[in-house]
Structure formats: structure tokens, C-alpha cells
Image 1 (cartoon, rainbow, N blue to C red):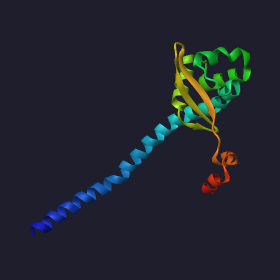
Image 2: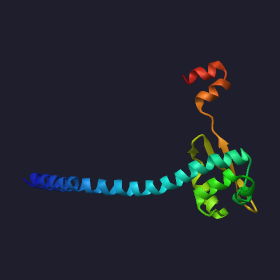
Image 3: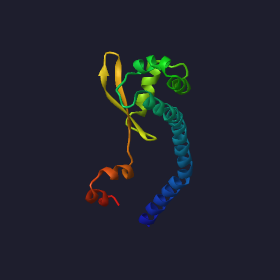
Image 4: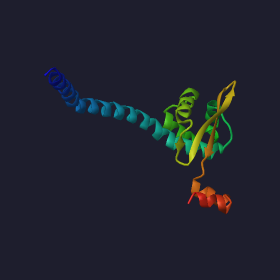
Length: 146
């Protein structure tokens, strides 16, 4: 009888936890959605800006300050910087690049490649897709990926 009582108490506790589960799941989904919307806005800005930077400097290394100095010579870059950052400054640009660092943005990746006395050194790298790179692989190696 004592075992039956413990079993009943355990089942009541499990039932209580299960009843609370939908509310906890809803809270977790809401919190995740809030975080995703913040990240999403930064991602959208980076998705527009990174290709413009790649067009302006290719895969050359640059600092945020040096890129901003290039705005006057490149109206497309200036427009992309303004849309992504509002009134651009090196600190805002550096933060955006840091958030984008190590992630794939379209066909580009942002890499932090070092530091200089003027700030972090960045590079935009065009990332080849596996299908594109197969053309450069020996046939025996490429067939492994099929």
C-alpha cells in the first residue's frame, strides 16, 4: 500500500509537469523568435553590404576606417554602407563585420585576418560551392562526392 501511495504521488507530480509543459514550450519559442528577429535584421544588413564590399575591394584586406575612406570614390559602396549602417562610422562597420565573421553570406564569407594600429583587418572571400569545385578536382576525387 505504501508503494501504491508513492506511485500515485509520482504520477501526480509527472502529470503536473506535463500540464506545465505547453506554457514552457510557448515561452521558449517566443524567446527564440525575439532573438531571431534581432539577428535577422543584422543578417539582412550584412547580406546587402558584404557583396558591395567584395565588389569594391575584392579579396584584399581592409580596415573599417580604410573602407569608409573609399566611399567618396565608390558611390555603390557608399550607398550600401548608408543603407546598412545609417550614418556610417568605423565602429558600426566593425561591429557588423564581427557579427558576420565566420558565417556564410550568400556566396561570401567575412574573415578577420589580423589587426593593425588602425583596427581589425578584414577580408571578404568568395566561397565556391562543391559543385563548382568538382571541375578542379581529379575525377577519382570528384566521384567520391557524387
